[in-house]
Length: 246
Ligand code: PGA
Image 1 (cartoon, rainbow, N blue to C red):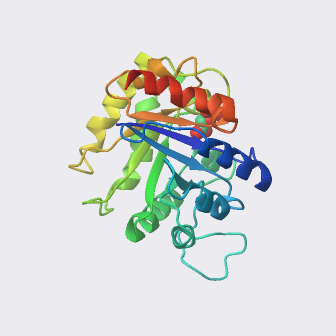
Image 2: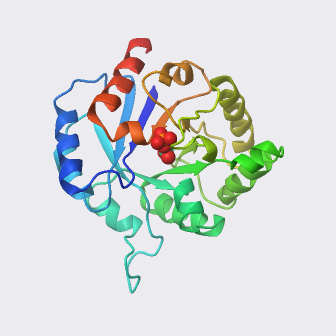
């Protein structure tokens, strides 16, 4: 099973999200060997979920609030996303961490909220260029994974996305062999927190031209695609490429 998840970020407005969702519905994909999911904006998610019902695609939220309800202007809770049919939620995406100032403690609370209600979190981790250059990659990833301590992961579904910050939206994708080594390291590190096998996706400038170099490696369980997932042609060609090798 390989995962291809598309993070539409804030690239598409309501109409554009629905147009892309409906275009994806016209295609046939290998549902037996692929796990496909899209992450539209909060504005479009309910409409997209309704369109994608009975399709190969699951739908997830890009960000959640950990409090269920109350006076939290602008926030939408994990529970509210679950209530409209979301299956997944991205948690701790680097744009949330570095543009919106989300802390590891925020990430921990969001993970806990998702796990408690049965919304599958995709915990995004990744080092900045300075951290990589100064040999602090593993220290950074270790800190970001430490939010899993104390969470009840037993029989819960969770995924990790390894997305080096310097590779996101830059066209400067991580060398696949290097990414696989990091995935191996993450798999070892995860043994501290869970006895279960946790899938790890690679993210950062994935496109049709390089996707095979990642998903053909055993420690890379799939990809989290940003920019290239927000356009019909590029997203479909990524999925079709992966279908050729599974
Ligand atoms: P990108 O983004 O594919 O545009 O680099 C990946 C992500 O942020 O999930």
